Length: 56
Image (tube, rainbow, N blue to C red; front, side, top):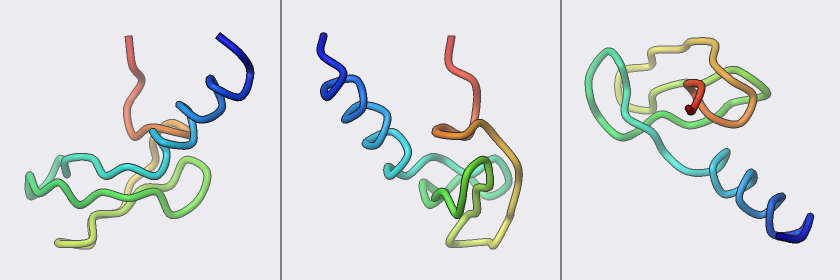
């Protein structure tokens, strides 16, 4: 894979929405590097730089 394709995957993962650990809604978005917040309940937490949790 090229560097552009890998970077596109990283950016897509960072901009997508994830499920909230507190309320369960798929509304968690990245605020800044490592900071994530649920748009529904306002729960703010620290996670990975491009995804809320470490992927295996």
